[in-house]
Amino acid sequence: NDGLLLVLLVALLPTLVSTNVGTSRIVGAINERVPGQIEIDDLKLAWLKGLSLEGVRLYDPAGEVVGSLDAVRLEEVGLFGLLRGTRDLGIVASEGGALSLVEDEEGLTNLDRALGTRLLGESGANHVQPKPTNDSPRESRPTSSLPEREDPAWVPADLRLAFAMRDIKGSVVGPSLPDVRIDMPEATLTADG
Image 1 (cartoon, helix red, strand yellow):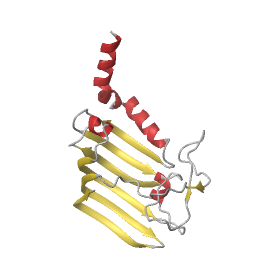
Image 2 (cartoon, rainbow, N blue to C red):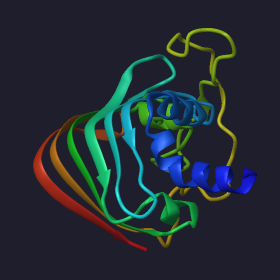
Image 3 (cartoon, helix red, strand yellow):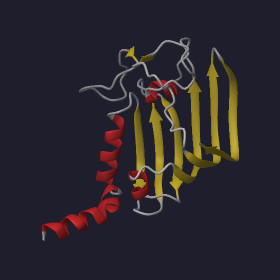
Image 4 (cartoon, rainbow, N blue to C red):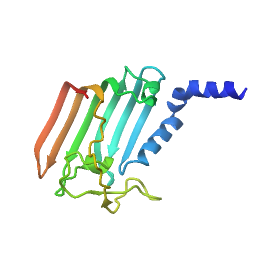
């Protein structure tokens, strides 16, 4: 009986994770690992094929919106493939969104601060705001040093995917970055590690 219950729970895992409670737990686990905050309105998972997220927003540690996506879909990979560590994600389709990339005088972007990464290399000070303990996640927090990493790349070198984007808008500004306004009705970017 216990074995049957375990098999049933495993089979229903994508359905359970796709509930509001499951989505909240996934978002909570992500937010424990990044200095900023992510919000996801809806998450749908399947074992073999099909993952989707709706209403995705990323905030920096000060609570400012860094970016948002109305919808993101991975149609060629499922939860089983991700758990096995697949490096071929197929097409990652995103629709409707905005990005506001802002670089500070130290060379860090708001995206760096939100994710605890360094997108622009080793230049600039390495400050990132830590997660709160008992206060609101969007309140301003003091800065602390970002841990040094031997390999600043955070994307696996052998990752294969194609980003299919539609209706994405954004801006890039900063002391060492050109001011850019983005209005992307449709584009595809590929990464073939």
